[in-house]
Image 1 (cartoon, rainbow, N blue to C red):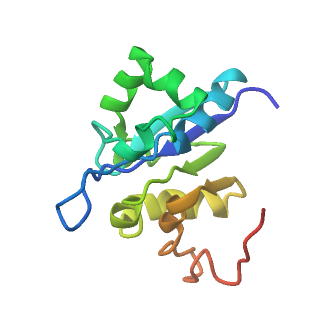
Image 2: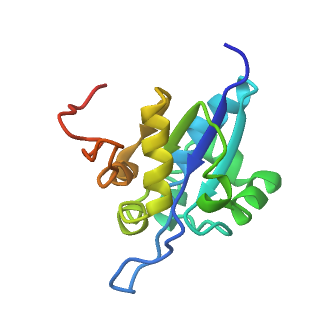
Length: 161
């Protein structure tokens, strides 16, 4: 298949709406696809609605949730620097990707569903017959995506595992 160009979209939100608890990206929901893609030599872009630094959910860094793959990347300075300098979705919206993947974390429900640029990227990706994938709370990014015919992307869709 050759080199696959992958866009991984992650959250910018760092605190729950209550303002009482820090949160962010659930690390393993990025690191596992990242590791698999890197191993195959694929081209990976990590972007977020606003660009810049990506907060990590502290719960995903605890000893019972931080698995071997995630720990390897969390301890990798180059990878951590990538997370501090993500591109904004606006900066990548006109690029062509083979795969668009929405990583999870509870607070993706705050920034993904209303993001118009994310919706545009997903709709174009889907309508061009390319892969759109999401994990856990990342699926919230699919909720408000409308296709060119005006229908929601998720209309008449069933869970396909």
